[in-house]
Length: 164
Image (cartoon, rainbow, N blue to C red; front, side, top):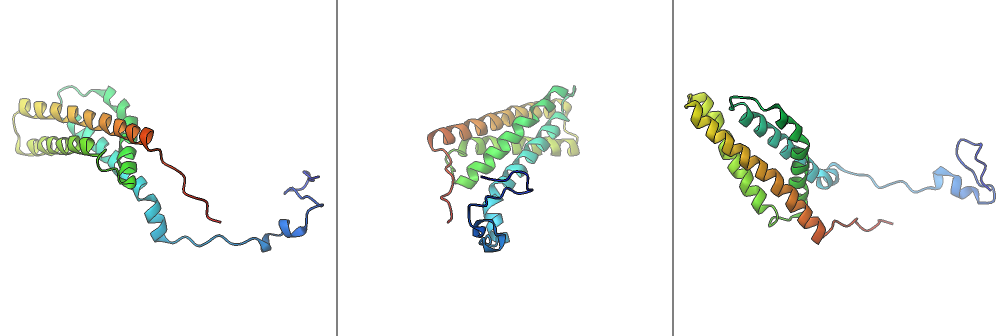
């Protein structure tokens, strides 16, 4: 029976070979290439989350009244960004077609609002373009989350086979 009063449980009826850490094999070394290959989807997801948040604040800045409740949607932007990164990592480009199209529209509207601020375009034009950008940003977020759910329900992610 194990002696639980010791810092690490020890079972005396088993051989000391099991408890000797020197006899355990060392884990294989992990290189930077392997880590980059394993986590690039997560990095892209974080980058897309930041892009969505930056677009929100740029578009929100053009409206007359700052709608502070929009900040409460940032968690959905994080989920959508991670959905983008995950779907890119899995190579599900068909599922990313619709969110990618809306993201392209969002980028066009956001850049137009930014350049409109620099060129001093009329306030009404900037407001309309910012509203269109906000709508396309919302559609981007919703369609990315729906695409992730659609892919994961039809073809769930499976754990890799164990390495023995």
